[in-house]
Image 1: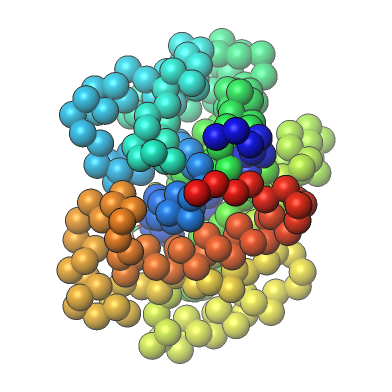
Image 2 (image 1 turned 180 degrees about the vertical axis):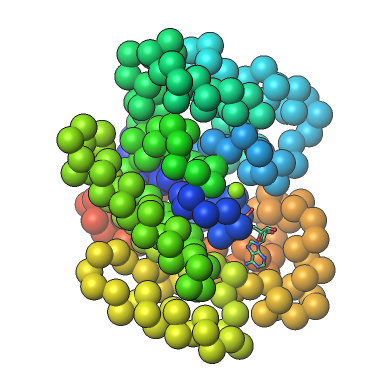
Length: 287
Ligand SMILES: Nc1ncnc2c1ncn2[C@@H]1O[C@H](COP(=O)(O)OP(=O)(O)O)[C@@H](O)[C@H]1O
Ligand SMILES: [Mg+2]
């Protein structure tokens, strides 16, 4: 823990539901932790699926009721006080259904919470600048203030999408929102970069999906499509299905599940690209 780390904040966002945002946040977080990175995952969806997927024990659940992302927004609680250690190198800031109210307040009366309502999460995460290697934020399926706060807090956005025509509208809207945040009048986060578009739940036995993948990859320089593709679990056969029935294996860093495997490849792809981009000499190492 002696080396300083530069926390890379990655926001997993797409206003479309069901594109594997939460699954990606959970497995990418677990995969990076598995690669010995120090990881914080933040559940910014009132549905709290990320929090549930981590299968907190009873005392952790009790803690998360009083100390979560909503209490950070609503009561000015410090992020430090809300940190839940899930594994040695994996921490969580839990979600809460109260985030529904938070979003309404942020939309209707933002100044009642903070003078910089779009920067609340960014400001809250400031103390963690050198504490983690990666912070992964799971967003709700909307373009409201919770997603905006996550995008303003982030260094990078990762956009999961299905390889389907209907999913492209979600991708286009995301790109518009990112453009506004980077280049708009308010330039809320000029440094925000698109880490990449991640094709999820991919079925290589379907021609339409193969064609859509090719189309995404041939898109003009606008965004990078990760080399890693996340296969649909059906591609693993019955064994894959059975192994993903329970979320327990997700946090069991001693074993690799069928579902974790593609996310380990993704984690390596991301870590390599970011550490190359930031500085080839500043890669933090720890056993
Ligand atoms: N690789 C996959 N194969 C099959 N089903 C998946 C895969 N990834 C996610 N899912 C399922 O798809 C649904 C939506 O995923 P989720 O991560 O909740 O999406 P989002 O957060 O974008 O709404 C969930 O039921 C999840 O279990
Ligand atoms: Mg979700």
